[in-house]
Image (cartoon, rainbow, N blue to C red; front, side):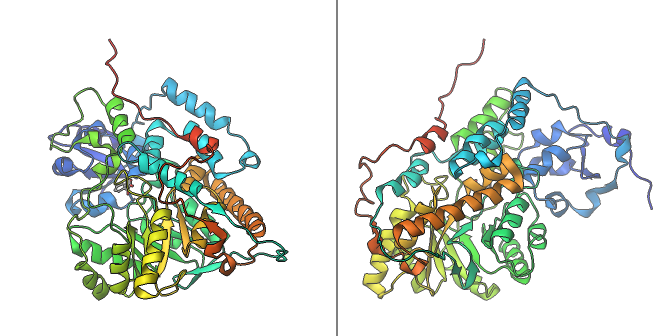
Length: 498
Ligand code: 173
């Protein structure tokens, strides 16, 4: 065996002409890769000759570097005892953040999903908070996603013996203890070192389904390996311009037992998330945002790593998907009845009525509003009733309470995806946070099923809600203080400090 490389040797390669970095105890020659790095060369050069693991970890799956660099650039393991620690300068801001982490209230004081967000905002790094919380343009859709639920009111039934209530159901034929699933979101390790594994574990405990994202920080196999026997997982797919890569991912997912393929169709290009973009402006030196290869770092983390997504994806591709997998296919990000009908006519297993958490097209309508027109038109045109086993409707975006979910179920959804609240739960409390979030939802379901007069989900019928105002975007509703006080206003550009 070749002797281990030393830190001193690696440190010599600290320039654009010869750039080595250490990740997870191994040395890589990234000189020729610098200009191809989706995140720009500048960030790599900052770690030239050094250990980049801490910076690398939250925003790359563990195999990103090994998969992208030719074998001859893998220089082998380094003797970590000889590697100088990268000096981490603890800023005043970071000190204040760490103090906040210490000051988190016990979970028993977290009473609802909004509470996680309020804590997360104070204990997350500024970058991570900006990345998770940001949404497209003026963030109108982001707020509307939540507000739309406030235009729906209940018509409960009484005198029904609600001693026991059961809100379990099936999604694509697979059991779930609640009509929700943990939806996909990228970059879990920005919020917590265990990233998406927090979700895998909590999903197992609570008998709910996790949708594994293409752009998770954890490796796909880590999340599948962490599942308990029989635990159901779905896979969210970003379709790569290189279909061979997509084919490999899909077939690997199927081989590993993934039970549904949710193809994201609302992100041919990533939306502008200005809160995320402003972070780069404040952290980088002025005028330094343009990477040397023209990779524009000012676009925020997500845009930098999303250039592989194929804007050419079209209905014609569905036959190809069918030829490479037997998993049920669901389109995630459908936003009107016409496309839902097309998906049904083309034999898909369902659609997620979603606007990507308000992160894509601003002024896209909420999933819950679209649900109302989809069920109406598919009933009128194809005689379908909902929930429907053969063609399932899901919604996501803005859900914070079991009452939100119950409204969606009443209007025909099979289940509802919840994303940010779980990210905030693990960002503030790790696995225990997600566990607690699911407990809260469970309790809210029990109480609200009783109060609405439904013993099971089949008894939650359209007559139990008044959604007549759903399409009116300016009806007056009672203010939602918890939600609104978590919302962080957008900021204008600021004058430079003198
Ligand atoms: O919403 C997102 O941030 C998202 O879907 C994404 C897409 C590509 C890269 C990172 C995140």
